[in-house]
Length: 363
Image (cartoon, rainbow, N blue to C red; front, side, top):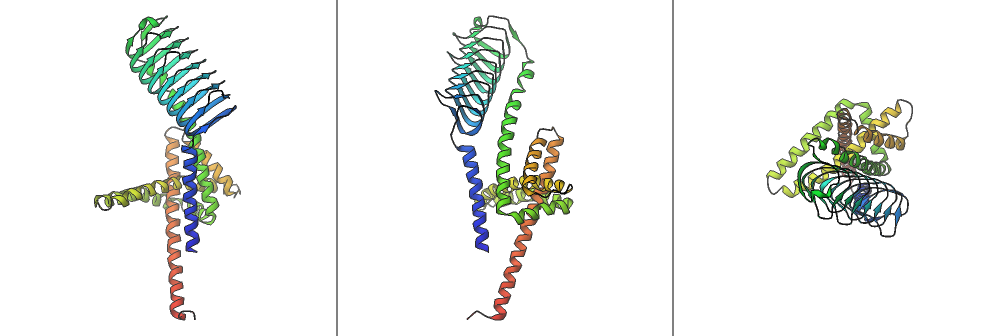
């Protein structure tokens, strides 16, 4: 029995690691269609065409053509080919060497429109530094510490800016206005792009982990859900105790110096347990709510719980509070179920040893 449980646990860990590696680190190449993609690197190869692209990745590179809109959250975004629609980008660095035929909204550490880069509509940028040496056919609104206009820069419309404007101001055909309120216009760029893509990415990971838990440990998962439904107050308090107590224990272990490696390993393990607690909490609460209308399908409860949890994150303040309560329920139920399972295993071991001791070894 114990070896079977060990194999199942190892399988679960391997599956989760595989999911994270595949979803989070696999280089991806997109095909000619509307694409929502994530990975270490998302690339539209030279000669390839996609209708629209939504990407959450370490690096996003457009060497080919996106005929529609581009939405990207990444460490680095480079457009070397063509985007036929609008582009919304949040990244550490953004480089436009090709063409964006529509509007460009970008937020990042640095934004560069290189020589030969072309924005066919308006430009709205918030960044630490902005360098323009290409063409903007519409108006530009830029909030940055430094704004550098190169010798080959061209802005056909007006320029509103906040920051230090340097370089070739003759590149602006319209009026140049310093406007400290421009940050209000730029601020929505990051959350509008990042929250949608990151929420989708997180939802998929939570669904995959939840499916693995229900498939590998169906009875244990059922006990977790039952615990939340039958005694939510004590379960939530147990979750709060674990959330506070385990980090204190890890810090105390690290203080001994020799315990630092154990504290580090324990920290990673507890982070995984927290993730499992989030998934179990949403699953358990959804299962309880569905049971009120006589629906007991665990897979439906998983889907409803994950989607509802993701939706709650979009509600300011109240959504975060409700998700935190659900998390405490999941963490508490998980901790109690693990303790009960361990206690039952010890009792079975004692009974087995007692039977051997009373009957003697088998001949």
